[in-house]
Image (tube, rainbow, N blue to C red; front, side, top):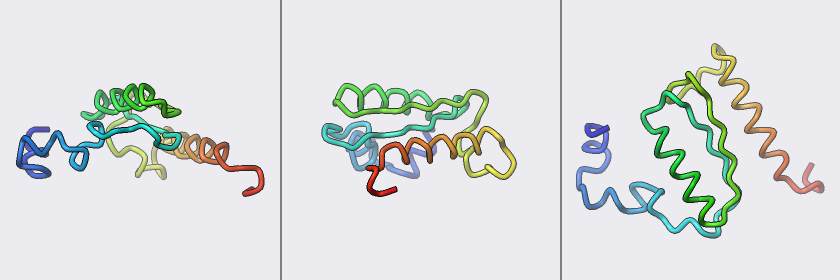
Length: 103
């Protein structure tokens, strides 16, 4: 991750900015949030921490973890059944958020 941070945001001080890393933002007042987390992702722990921080800020959080899946697994839905399940589950979650009149 050190190399990616150097490319993405070379200034170490700027990395603590909410613009560089949303985990540092004031999360209060955000809408319900769904986090799909691949357990083999180098960003797994940050995603789980984001879930905790959102929850602490009073945001309704749905954390959907996928064991044995790498970062970006959902783009391979044509080949990975777990990706199709994750997409289907996220779509169902979104539908449940919609008001009845919108359906």
